Structures are given as structure tokens and as C-alpha cells.
Image (cartoon, rainbow, N blue to C red; front, side, top):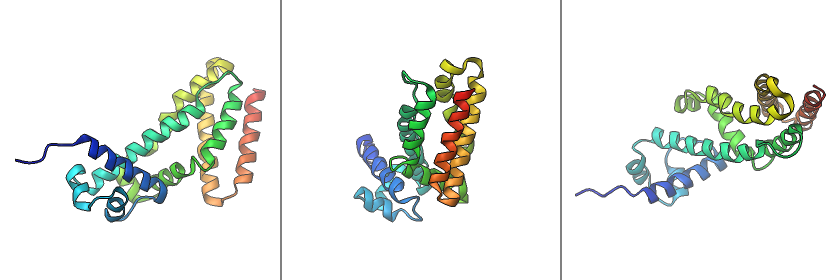
Length: 185
């Protein structure tokens, strides 16, 4: 008789593997993940089937965490939404947001990442539009959907710029200037 599935163990393994990937990136083999989870590569295969399936679930879990984390930062507050966006930018580009940017930058920019999550580019766009629209709606009314797309495009562009140049002072200043334009609207 085979072992019965143990969802608690599987969840603990997934959490440990996700923590490792957020800290160190996507590994070339299962060995670093197994070591981080305190198990063997064989047990990871037992619980997840294949390396690719494990990595896909790790990416899904990291994305779930990111959506919760950044979603809180972007949630409308009792203040002009531009202030919320300024705070969210600092969270996104600060130490707490850096692991997500590194990981999802890899997914976006490498063939391995794209193979693991072929629909990532679309999801990375559409996942944020609703929360941005909700925040912008109170001050910008019917223009909120278009402005949400513009905000997201500016954020994504500045993140790519930061990744390419490392010039955070310039991109921070650019986002501040963009928020000034949004306030003036």
C-alpha cells in the first residue's frame, strides 16, 4: 500500500522552496531546493511530480505572495491616491519588493522563465489593473481605467529602466514627476 498524500508536508516544502527562490532565484537543479527544504530531490519529485511542476507551483506561490503584499500597498486609503502610489512605489522598489522584482524579471526575460510561465507577461499586466482602477476612481472618475493602464505602463517602464541602469535616484525622481502630472490632472 502506498503512502497517502500529506498536504501539510507538501505545503511546507512549497513554502521553503518559494522562500529559497525569492532569495536566490530559479535554480538549475533540484538540489538547492531540496537542501533549503530539508529534504531530498527524490521527495520533491514525489510531492510535485517534476522539476518543472515544482517550479511552476513555486512561481504561482511567489506571485500569490506578491499580489497580497503589493495589493495591500496599492489599496485605496483615506488620502489622495497619488500618495498611496508614492508609498507603494517605495515598497515595490525597496528591500521588501526586491525579491519579487528579481524573480519575475527572470521569468520575463529568460527562455527558462517564459517556458515555466508562458502567460506571465499578460498576467503581470492584468493582475494590477483592477486595484489601480479602484484607487484612481475616487479622484479621477471615468478616466480611472485609462489612467490605471498609464500608471501600470509607467511603473513597468521605470522598473525595466532601473533594472537596466541601476539608477534608482533617476527613476524615483521620474515616478515622483509622473505623480505630479497625475495630481495636476
